[in-house]
Amino acid sequence: MKKITSTIISALVTTFALAQNTIGTQSPNTDFMTSNGKIMVVVAVILIIMAGFFSYLISVDRKITKLEKEGLNH
Image (cartoon, rainbow, N blue to C red; front, side, top):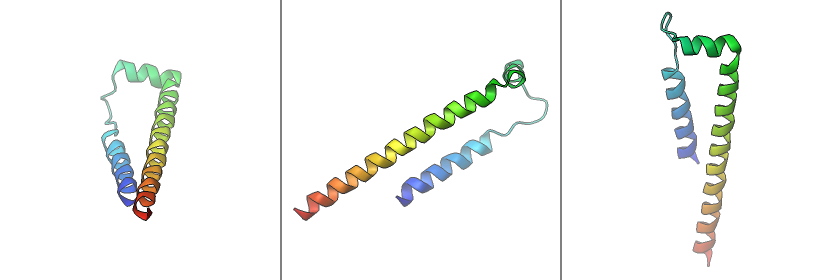
C-alpha cells in the first residue's frame, strides 16, 4: 500500500510541476479553451478518469492480497 501511495504522490507532483504555464507562451488553442471555460470541463473529466483508475487499481490490489493470504493459510 505504501508503494501505491508513493507512486500516486510522485505522479501528481510530476504532473503539477510540468503543468506550469509561463507568461506569453499560450497558443491560440489554449486561449480559446480558457475563454469558453471548457478547460475546467477537460480537467474535471481527466480527474474523474484518474480517480476511477486509481480506485480500480487499489481494489484489485486488495483482492490479490486477500487471495495470496488465503493461499498461504491453506
